[in-house]
Image (cartoon, rainbow, N blue to C red; front, side):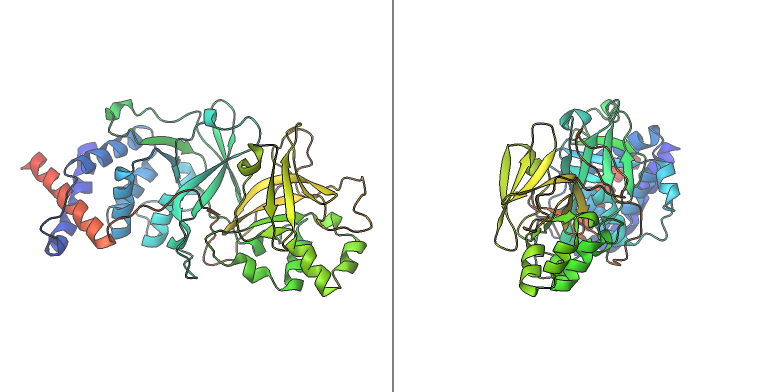
Length: 418
């Protein structure tokens, strides 16, 4: 069965080779049979662990140019990568199955890149409390290229330590949990040394837009406030730096704040105290030290602190708000939920801690918590969040990559079966 599968995989390459040969340069450098051997070992590992839908998805990638590019980049990566592989059941639950008829070429590759993390991520590499933030291999500009940005910002995912060496990927539509540790790759005899393969129980979804996130119960006042000052679209526009926004719970928007919002100058200042478009700040950016200073859109400075009890806060002047949930990854940015308005009002010094109707995921002891209920993202272009922590690697054009792979795999096939 495995030999027949390999023959099918190689036949796909050889069929396309016949039509692409005329495009080759005489001095083309070929990675020879090593690429095919690498992919064959990867398919065998997936098959032997029952992850056959993802295995078939990789074969599907070999049938189009963007897929060739993804497979080639996977093989040629000089850094360690963590491949999150959804189980067959996870794919089946969202209707993605072979022969992948409804999966377009663009979306198919983006799905693969979304599940390919830069770096070696294990339970042991994550903090006991809080989150780790991993860049995927999905470059924002791949899909949301609606501006002139030449961003090297990547889609980010939030990771938490689970039980028994597992990892929890904290997503907007729900959490995905890994198996208890990565797959054993020893049978590949070192060919897959640049990979760690971590099976997960859900297919990752693209994060929603900010406007969608702010329709969640308990957060809608911020949506109204952004519309009042006319900054919703500006904040969501694709940029290299993304954005960071601190969103107060609805329960803290009292009459004092609402009265201030009727003054256009004060309204602008109030809302711009809560976000910046200069940087996408995830919690590891401030938990590694006692505090950090973040300049926001109003020109004011916020102090974001990691407190001794494990909780986090953001301070503006004498006002200190608890961060009751951090690292909510959005389209082109990140959202943190707080329990105070970052602007002086007559009720700013109230000692009462507001609560949220939003249920919670696990948070450090001593913090009020909040989470986001399931919903539907109405942004037809899909969602991405950015973290500018890696540079894009140069690669050949799609046609060059695909033809190069075809020639090399054809050569290896000829050697094996002549």
